[in-house]
Structures are given as C-alpha cells and as structure tokens.
Length: 97
Length: 144
Image (cartoon, rainbow over all chains, first blue to last red; front, top):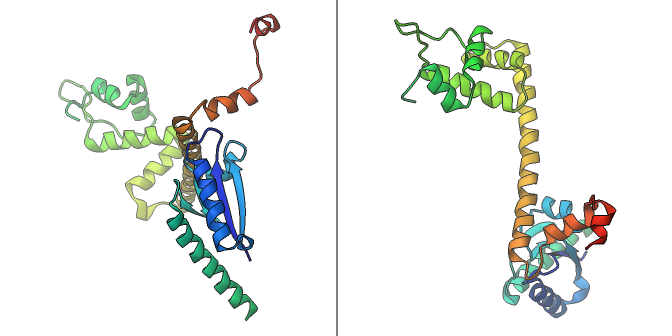
C-alpha cells in the first residue's frame, strides 16, 4: 500500500513551487513507487481542503493527516515520509498475518 | 453593572426598555423589585437571566422554549422530562450550529490567508469573478 501525499496549493502561492520540488526529490530518493502524490488547488476543492484542516498554502497532508502547514526542509520531509512508510509496512504485515 | 435601573440595563444589554417590561409581564423575568419611588432595580440574577434570554433569542429559540429552559436553569435537578428533552434538543442544535460556524471560520481563514500570501492577484476575487454573473446592463459591460 502506497503512502498518500496531498499537497494543497493555489495559483500565486509563494512557497508551493519549493514544496513540489521538495516532495518530488524526497519521494524519488525513497522510491517513488511507494508514494501517491496529488497536487490539489484549494480554490478548486475548497470543501475538501477545509475538511482536512487546511488554513494556508502550501499544506502537506499524508495519509489524511495534516503534517506540514508550511514548506518543510527536505530533512523534515524525509523523516516524516520514512515514518509513514514504516507504518504502512507494519499495517500491511498485520493484514498479511 | 453599577447602574441597575431600567434605562441603564437596557443600554448595557442592548434590549429595548419596552422589551424589558414585556419580559416581566409575560413571566420570563420575575417581578423586578422597585425602589420606594417605584423605580425598577434589577439584581445580578435578573441581569444574568436577561443575558440568557438574549442569547437564546439569538439562537432563534421561541419565548415559550426560553421560558421552559429558564425553569430548568432555576432548578436543573427537578426539571420535568419534557423540559429536559427540550434542553437536550436545543443542545444538539447548538452543537450543530457550532460545527457549521467552525467550518465557515476555517474556510474564511483559508481565503484570507490565500489573499495575504498571494504574490499576484487574490484567489478570493478570482473565485468571485468566476462565479458571480455580471448583472450590469449590456451597454455598461460593452464600455469595459
């Protein structure tokens, strides 16, 4: 099961480009096949953004949990995504017995 | 509240003087003690009760419902079953309103933050322009 990453952005957002690049670099380094990345325009999907607790852009949600409400460093991002990868493996292990 | 006469209480709570008299007449407020000169002097308890009435009215509770809730406010342990049910139902309505308000607050916070942080333009205005039809007469639109 892949880790689901959602990046909430909007046109004209100053940090969103950096967040996209950081996410692309870190997921590539950890193995892009383990991740499902969706970039969401909050103006297009405002109800969904609000339901996820998004109050500004860029915001990064991982597996339906709001993790970063600003641009993280690559190091912070890597640490967080590694944690989710491990959790996903543990949950998959439980399911498979 | 230092001044407890009807005019001062009305000003402080944003209630009309006639409305204050009416609350007393219809029983929402017990008879307010008078000075020897016959002037009403509201107690802390009266003022607390009036604040409750105003809050409940802002939530669109009827005066009849407010009267029942005030009975419960006086003596919660001995409230009748129908009054308890009403209070539970009103509590549910308030919880629902709070959830709606929280969603609205979050949505507006997001929109305000988007405008504040935008390098150029404002997504709120762009969103409004996309959705609101131009209602000006056709000749006015043509001049743009």
